[in-house]
Image (tube, rainbow, N blue to C red; front, top):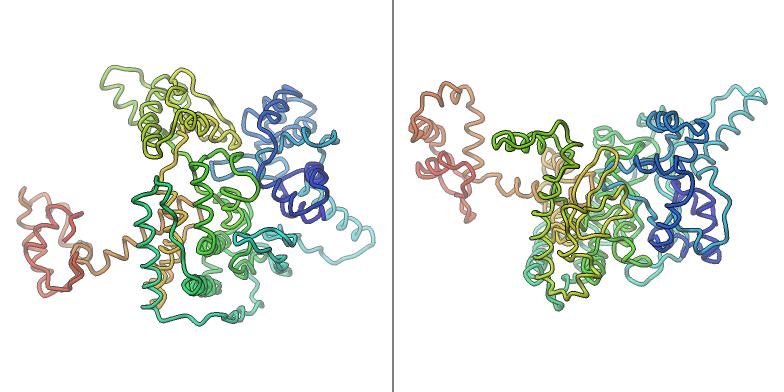
Amino acid sequence: MASQLYAMFPDETTQYVDAVLKRNGGDVSKAADDLLSGALSEASGNKKAKTGDPKVHQLMDMGFKRVRAEAALHAAGHNVEMALNLLLSGFDKGTDYMDVDNEAEDVDSGAAAVAVATPPVKPPTHTAKQKQKQKSKAAAKSQGMCGSSSAVPPVAPSFLHSMPPGLPSFSGQMFSAMPPMGIVYGAAWGALPQHVPPRAPRPRAVELLDDGALMRIVERAEGAVREMELQIAEQKAEPPAISAEDQQQLVALYDDMIERFDVREYQQKHGMQPYESTVCALEAGQLVPVYFANVQYNSIFYRKALSMAGLRNLILCGREIFAELKAQLFASDPSKYTGAGGLNRMKRMTGNMVDLDTVVLRCNDPTTLETINKMNKAKGNRVYANVQEFAHSRQAAEMAVAAALPLLEGFVKEFGLTKAQQKTRRVQTSQVDAGKIPVAHDNSSRGKWPLWQYINAGVNTMHVNVPNMADIIGALLRAPFAALRAYLRCKDLPEELARFYEDGISDSCFNGKWKALEEFNAGLDKQGSITQILADLQAKHQSVFTAQFFDADDRKHTKEIREMVRLAKGVCARDRSGATRPITKADVRAWVNDPAVEI
């Protein structure tokens, strides 16, 4: 039983996994929930974090995890500088040892507090990944001693694990054990095996309706989401339900989308690795492996496939996840969500989570520093030497506070929070002080304060403890339908379909997924429009519209209008009402004066 958990949580120490399993009486399902949800107390975690070797804490303050810091110190003879060099050079590369950005969260934020609920555990020595490495090395050594001349095939990291039966699903039913997803051996690492035949189409349980009927289902769902968004803060505002028949059709359409992505053209284009060859075999309702945009082993193909699998699952459980987040007033603190609900359900069903806080200042952005320095220089104020100097300045703190206060006040007003609710939700404006902004070095501290500064692995940002509601609604409720809308508009045109998989389906975090779909659909809406046709005409005739051409034009753009009218003569396009008609001189004049105009 423990081996299943080792595979599911390769970044946790085996001793920690054993302790959690023991605390749950050997119940694998409960132990998995515990490991995912971080059920141990924050206070105990803080207590343990303050004890131990100060050299370890010195490395932890730089963004390294405790287990890796201890191991590196031991290997370096307790020399902090040597240990740091080891860690920076990739010491124990099998472990994700830094949270490179806010996407790379620990699976269990309560890992440090396990001693509270269990008997003393022997200090960790090897992680599950390290133990697997040692077994592989021992096997190779054994074969070598026996005189075997055959090469041992590399052990590829498992991207999907067989889940124990009995995990509760979003519908109250029970998940079946996930089938083992075969790993392809015998090919060069990183190369797509040429002998692997294309996967046979999966049998269809539901016969898809025609594209027009499917688009009407999508439009009904999108309309219900828009209506709900207008009254989001009201208790009666509930996410729109989808009928069982419509749900079956939309899931089947996602199956078609994923199946058409699982072909050699896209596998090669997006760098599919041999061990990822069965990622598209995931079924609707199955757990989606956790993935991040900054992982070491996984390809873009793998992440795009999981992105689509997560969007498909939101057709089934997005409504429930949204309701669970709303019940906690969209708290970004992971400890607010117990068991498998809320953020934990979202991570399990989609592979990652939407951000429930808002970045108000990116101190590590060179563009931000350049802008601030130009402004300060013009006013005779301080000019900062680097982003670190600016990040720790009073000016940065005051800018963050100025941006955070209106957001906190707006959230309190929108949801009508009492003083007690504000304190529980940690959005009190009285607790915001430019002279005392708390600092967090990992994601376990997210949502603990109304405003905080996050410093880790080169990232230095200011966060306010309220979400961007448009992003949450977009990521959870709009995105699954937006992807289907775009797919229906592109699926019969090979070039457009390739562009959909390239630009419409993002392999990043949930906020990025929604933004990519929103932008892609906006681009589709402009296709064939008057403004788009005029822009394409000018781009096509760049030999005419040179820098010298525009320099010689007058302030009323007489030459440009005359030339564009000539080029657009007899050309028809779609106006904003949807009607197709010839392009007029008035259209050209409006577009030349403002290229962003809607005609």
